[in-house]
Length: 197
Length: 425
View 1 (spheres, each protein chain N blue to C red):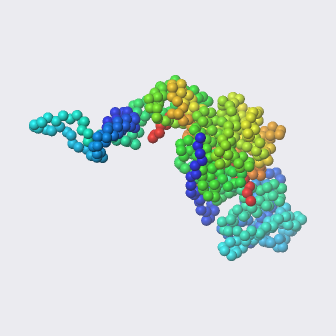
View 2 (cartoon, each protein chain N blue to C red):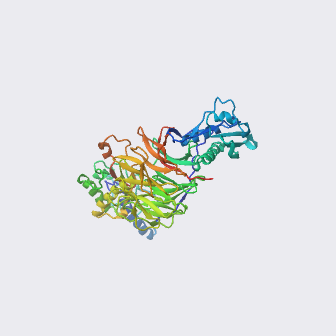
View 3 (cartoon, chains in turn purple, yellow):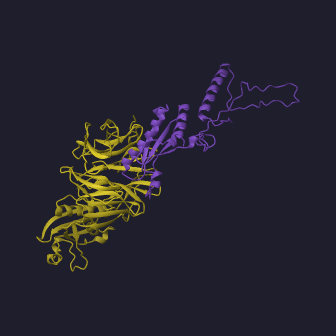
């Protein structure tokens, strides 16, 4: 098993797979047949052996296992899901009738921008939301303002549109029958969502 | 750009052997001048599960334009014109009398006959025979009520029409179609993600709607009879607010393309996308005028949301609403002369009716969370979404504001997003 140590699984697996493939091709050119999935025991001989064996891992028949874990997005292995990592914070809240990003949410935006810039094959969606007041379609458009505001903040930090889609849920996820402003406030948010969430 | 993808979907039809109302209707108010009419129980009525004269009476009653007379206790209950003793009905001041019969015929079918008589002149105003399957009993009663309504008021009746609406029960959403009296609900599509914005094709065979099943708003068009559904628009960003053109050839829609909401038109087969509005703000909630020449829409391009119109092919937009600081969600009367929309009146969202020629405005509902006004196809009634004790319900108000109805979901869910279907023959 490969120790991923908190890095993006597919990226490292891809690199290892590539280098492994090339190695295997070279081996094949030397007319050594490939034996799939056979692991030979290359551990060193016990100390009483007369001949020292050096474990260099350079045996041409040894196959290094690559694990592609489609469920890589689980907490602990993935910074996007790690509760101790700012990347697990996905909700940006807005003031009434406003789509400007408050300073307290800037670090979250910056963290996700940095992640996207270092993982150029990763795509994310920003989902805008509103409170319950008003018509459904008009609120869809208002919610979109919030998701676009997050996108523009990411653009300013260098992230390209091809990595971001902005959509809106409008008031579809709003708490019904809010009694006060504190309740409405909780509905005014844009959420960052990654594939596999 | 996305191409149209065909997806086959089996629509779930709720079977109703005994018809139960999906929506319970309460009525209040009434027209000042109500026409007194006797709807005499039909002969042979026990043959059918649904009582035809009861349905007719309920339809006429619900319109607020009729005073349906009590017939129980009358010495004679005629079932044909020849049996009517007019003096008895004159004593009740009846202006019109409906009589009829139901009989079983071959093949498990029914023959339904009715006559509408002028009670004062003692002449026939209408008469019709129907040969129907048992599943058509309710709709036949509605068609008879439509004939009566048309003969006595001069206006087309809408009792045989259908309404679409969306229910939310727990976490489940369903787009349903029911008869205009709330009976015979059928589920068009159901989902764990929101469904919004249903819109009828002009020929009444399809519904366009927005589904969040792919975790973003996408426009589908679904055939009511076959259940076939196809994606009309799934561009990057939002795809929403579908509104059919009067000739059925295209729809107005709203896209965002990663930026702000703008109005486009698209052919009914998914091609020919064309941007119609261009602003830096929100342009949304488009509707075609009934003559097909204009698209009316909501926009905040002037600061606060108001209603504007633009030529359907694109061009300069001009403002339509000048009263009140927040007007959205325009919907046309079928004759193109009036606009119903939603005004934010000091925090209360209310239905407003504006005469387009005079600019005169009438507040039609109380609010506070009214939305989605939809005209009946005869223009006489406006159906809209409201909240009653915190629960989504539908309400209807006559275009003169005098007759009101409330429609609650009998199963206890939330009802919203009503759309009244067209008249079909």
